[in-house]
Every structure is written in structure tokens, then in C-alpha cells.
Image (cartoon, rainbow, N blue to C red):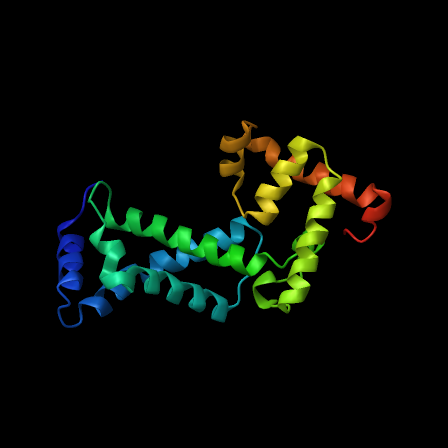
Length: 193
């Protein structure tokens, strides 16, 4: 799909800093950005509060205006503006969720009542949790370890993991489940739930 006339005009108005152009841009694409935020968080089993979603939306729009609308200036028109913005939004959201999630242990991610976005341990605790994750991962065999690391630590989707490790996408979930079971059964893995 190519760039529509409406989007072309809106893009040009923003780049020329015409009055109310940015407000019109946000009005047009806020729904798309919120959809990307919710879908990205859901695909990683992260529940967001309304405040979290709004913060992430602000991060996306801030990324768009940074560097004098650098993201918009780099748009080549090879796809629709909505598709381009969805990719940008997803990258920003994944990066921010990963930044917030680096402090989360595998057992916390599995707990449906746990919301990693709401947690912010002090820096000294973050290092110990990362060490704990590494210790847990060391108990797994190589293929399982990589899948668990990519999903829980790097925040990759099943599709991304499948492409990277060459494993069918429909087996990623069972691999994660098998790895969690193995960690639960291991003698020093009693803290993993």
C-alpha cells in the first residue's frame, strides 16, 4: 500500500510545522499506537495499567518528534505511513518494555498477578536478579536456554525466536513450558514457580 494523499499532506504539514499539524497527526495515529502497545505487551504476557500505556504512547510520540521529526524525515514512502509508524512504535515499545523487564526473574514473569512494568527495584537488586536469571538459564540445555533467554530476557516474539533458532513457531510454547518444568524439578530450582 502506498502513501495516501491524506497522510502525505499530514506528513508534510508536520515537517513544515504548520499550526495544529502535530495535533492532527496524534489524533490520526493514537489508536494505531495504542493497538501496537497493547498487542506488544500482550504477546509478552505483560499486563499494562492505563498509566503504563499512556507512558509508552508518550515514548512513541517523543521518538517521532526527536531530532526535528527525524523518524518522519526518514520515511521513504515504500509502505503506508501507518505501517511505518507501527514498526517504529513496536521498536520503541519493545525497547522500553525490555528496559523495564530486565529486573524480572523468570518465576515472576510466569506469575499472572505479577506486573513487571510496575516494578522498579534499586540498581543493586537488578544486578542480583540478572545473576539469578543467568544461573537459572545455565541449568538448561542449549536449545531450551536460547529460547528462554530470547523470550524472557530479550522479549522476542515466538515468530522472531523461530526465525533466529530455526525452530517451528508452533513448538516455541512447548519448549518454554518444558524448560520451566525442568527448572521447577531441578534441586536448586525450588524458587521457580
